Image (cartoon, rainbow, N blue to C red; front, side, top):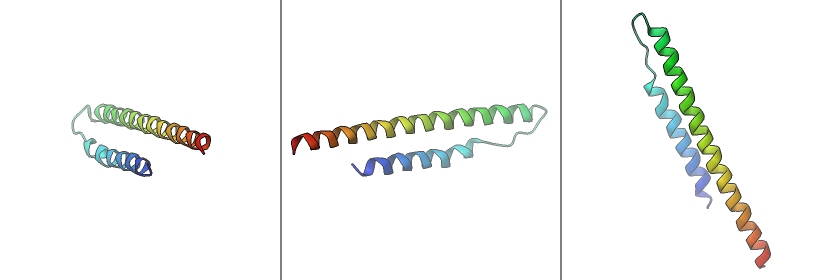
Length: 75
């Protein structure tokens, strides 16, 4: 069970590592607009990943509390 938080952290870090590769410098008259749209998409993706990570961490913590409660009642 100690591997789950490490796995979650590894997943988050790998996503953070991959994400900036998609951001590119655009050339042309709409470059700033495209850059802003790309930044907005990036921010949204990061926010979604962070939310998913928090949700998984909460789920893990709840399972740990439940297991500890069961252990207290059994012995």
